[in-house]
Image (tube, rainbow, N blue to C red; front, side, top):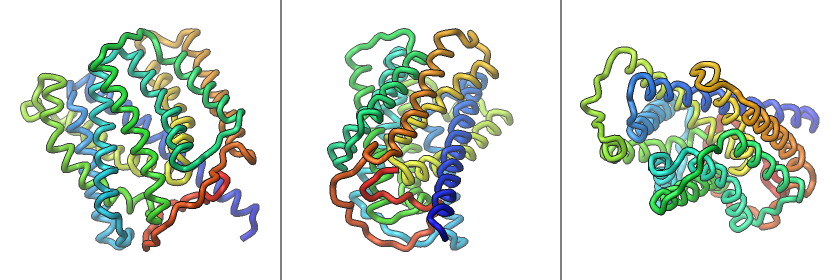
Length: 335
């Protein structure tokens, strides 16, 4: 196969990976918004546990059919990953409750510089000036779109710090573990989803009761709400898988930067379907700035020197796996 054909195939798979993630992520946000706002199912942590339980069932079924081969992930790495992931979920929920929406959005935006810091320190990645400026432009655009009222208190700030760092570490670890142990996306999900499902379903009802003063076991389940919960769990399988595919093929930073396209789409679709206050000039301006920054980032980071790793390659442990999508080559030049 010629290099040009390989390059075209990689571009097609990259685009398909991003589209898969965008569609499933935006879809689950809209479904969950309807489930919580319309049907009052406000048990976010328990619902996330259901998502991972559904993912566990699917990975177990595919493994039974032989589509996923046996692989190995050491217990210490599994425990660290699950701790980071669960603290991310719980931290985000608590941060949203204790902080204003504006500060919550600022905390989410700060994940990009934190992810950059982790790559610089742990992987010795170096960014060009244009790459840094493009990331700043994306942050500015999304901030203009989403940040309105900003108020903060001590406990809310602590919750936000825990959420941001745990999320950045979890996303870094997705990329790290896939490279180190040669794990495909489904392989890694097969290891992590059961532990996350069990822990979140155990802790979730108590945490949700603390956050909402409502009990999930006495919620009035109806046919429509059950259908929405089922739909949410089904889409979540694609969301979880697509996140692992995208971070595995790229990096956590790229996932965060380009991933803000989902924020833009959620805003637009939210105005279309839920029609609260409509698009105003500030939001439209922010969207234009953010999209321009994403295009600039894609161009800048793909150029020689745009984003380079100067350290030695991570030692890999070979394992037989079924890679749903091959992980991009990650040598000296990222992406």
